[in-house]
Image 1 (tube, rainbow, N blue to C red):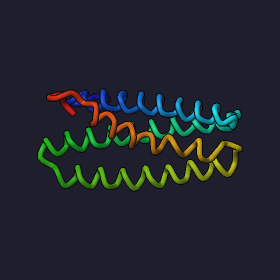
Image 2: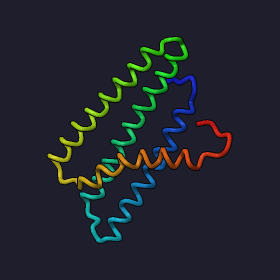
Image 3: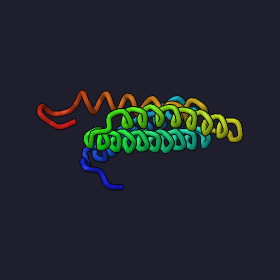
Image 4: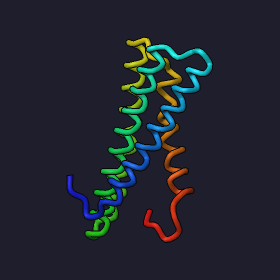
Length: 134
């Protein structure tokens, strides 16, 4: 996968690290509450992996769309991002419904990492140094 600007991939790794840290905190909270079980741990890991893969798909789509827009095709770039958003949402729903219906994973532990992506994005922006590229 080749990008004109590797800032998107750096951002992906920052956000993924944030999701990893927040998922570890989630597991620690479950442990402190005495509710840490295998299904909680597996649910948290499942949610973390799926949410990071979803964010990677978003990162790749937006990077390619930005490249396309720079090359003078902003309409196709916009429709690609919109189509990807819908497809990723539907795929997430299908994956989560299928996995949570057929396994004993803890639903809350599995869904929380999806929120952690948004928290990580916010924190990455909040702690960005003055003058640092997005």
